Length: 461
Image (cartoon, rainbow, N blue to C red; front, top):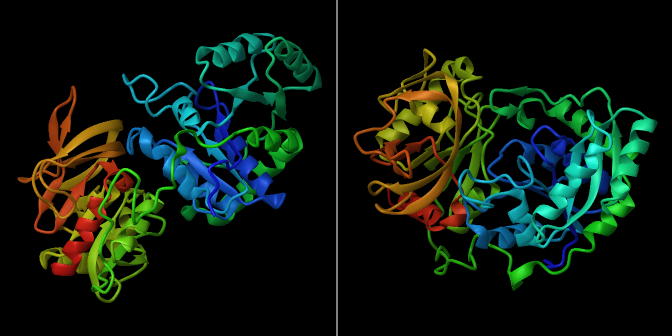
């Protein structure tokens, strides 16, 4: 059952590093411990935080990205994820008003909060301030009247006296303090070059970390007040219906797959390939595919009867030696590609299909080499399909996101995957026979035809 008035909160902050992930994940887990069915969401293209959210709630973590999917899909995707839930918690991205560069409020936490009609809880790092916290919070409260900041959680509070000074200062702003978390040993959530280490790589330790977050939030926050604030959210604006993989409010022509063969689509998983959106698998299934998961680190064969392959993002650079050592699977992938089977590879998948990665042999499907780079490549991209492929017809426009600290040489094949528009016009990626490989992460909910086209090619290849 879906209710468009599901109680909901958006956890935001003035800037990155304020403690959003700790508070949001801890709050999800604390609500779940109180017996609530919690729907977890993350603003933006982040793949890692939703893994921790899933541990906290026992439900799939989902992304809400107004750039990748368009503002019109934010509420439907939210309602899709919130089916059957008592409350929803949405973790923001960067600072509350930070979004796509040069695009105003687009893809910001503030925009998502307005699209959902959700109150915002502002997490403030109070470690180096006292009375100034009032000016900071006042600025965030008054900047956009369309954003309702319903409360503040003070993080890294030094002492009882420090907390008293902070609360006195905030009395003048009229925004309630809903929690105060003391300075403590940081919850063990190790990071590396692209952010937190994914849950799949440290599951037992991640479970422990989420438990610590829940305990921290339960001790320091007024959970009944936070739940009451969530219940002040009314009906989701605009009368949106939930998104479904069979039919989207903004796309007609649901797939006609009944009674037709169900091709098997193998999706890479395991510690090396953890970046994926849940909606991709749902769209593939709705389009008529039988979706199965395999682990390129350990499985020496593709699932029997594999007709198509999806290799998403992750950290193959961390596991290059292990991936290379699994020679039987590398050979199987190369043979599948040589047979013309549809293969969709994003970022980590692109690296896996190269001849080598940092000197370690990979699948050799693409005549390209990959290596770690000194500079992080990060940002939203406007893209257009250069030619026909198993994913898109020439001219198809999609929005994507790049996030990697590797480089592939050459950066594009004779038939590129995408033309990148904007100030930096270029082509990138590879299309050859059934292979579509690119650095660009895309969200297929924005263009369901991508999944339907891929499954249809799996049927006929």
